[in-house]
Amino acid sequence: MRDLRMHRYLAFSQLHKPYGMSKMGVFDALSGYRGTQIMHKTTVGRKPKKKIYHRVHELDRVMELQKKPSLILELKSLIQSQKTESLLLRDLEKFVGFVQKWNYMAVIEKYPSIFHVVGGQSDKSPPAVTLSEKAKKIAALETGARMQMEPILVRNLRKLLMLSVDCRLSLETIELIASELGLPSDFKNSLILKYPQFFRLNEVYGREYLHLENWDSSLAVTAREERLAQQGILNSSGKSWRAKLSKDGNFSGPYAFRLNFPAGFRPNMSYLEEVQRWQKMDLPSPYLNARRFEAVDPKARKRAVAVLHELLSLTMEKRLTSAQLDAFHSEYRLPARLLLCLIKHHGIFYITNKGIKSTVILKEAYDGSNLIQKWPLLEFRDKFVGLMGRKYGNLCAEASSCVVN
Image (tube, rainbow, N blue to C red; front, top):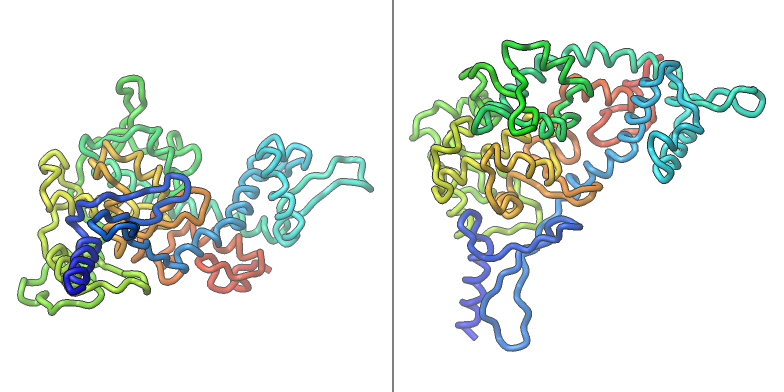
């Protein structure tokens, strides 16, 4: 019995080994990652143990809260894209499909403070939907928000290219995350061609690529390094950041990441010691060319985590779907078993399957369900969605303050 308990303890320790786990990960492509199954010797008839992926309900709620606001913002853009800034209800199906049409119709009916229906029975003209007067006042603020976003977008596009091995990305890959970056729909003409000193378009093997014209060392600073510099940690001496073993895995050092383990996770001492060793390990900059590192080098594996951290930091809401991350696999030299890498570092990243697709969220960017830092375009969207008259987590802190009288 004592040997059996010792065997179980060793199996549990191996299960929670964060950065050298050699066991097999199991992933359900339809529903997202469910658990890591550990195969080990057991008595006859016993099933192998599973490591449960601990859910963070506040971050799951982030995706739930976005469903209705996303419909509202998409319908707003659809209405504004029409020359008359009104959309015939009979044409709605043509733009969004038969099934989705009913979701939009429900939104139009539920929020007269945002959408106004004109024409119909008493009028000979066919019914159409337009923005309400209050909604039009707030929608007019989008132009100013877009102008404020431009320098942020140019900077982030340059950083995206600097992260890649050849300082280039296919335009198709950038388009895949354009909305997450905050790019306008016509960003090729309105942004890229506007800055020839930074960007160049070229065709490679039949695909259009965006190239970086000039390397700027001042941009090769990660969001993690900026945070540590503000805290006075990045350039501190070795003695000042030595610390005892932390129960939450956090470590005040220049190569450390901020960790936030889920409430139900109870790491043992062996796990925490391994985490602290990893936190102390030197961290090559993600802006160094990945070809300089061997894939088996532990520092290269830590650098891959830094690349993922920086990529998510460059998005507006600090999250991307698993498919979007995988699109950067070759250009960024991401780990072959990307999902397993994300799960090993569950103190940094969170994978939720509450949305339409599996989504990876940068934990440190959120306080509960609320995004901590919001760019101008997100602040504008909060004001517009505030017309719903309710508080939606990371949207408006108080909806009444968002309404224009």
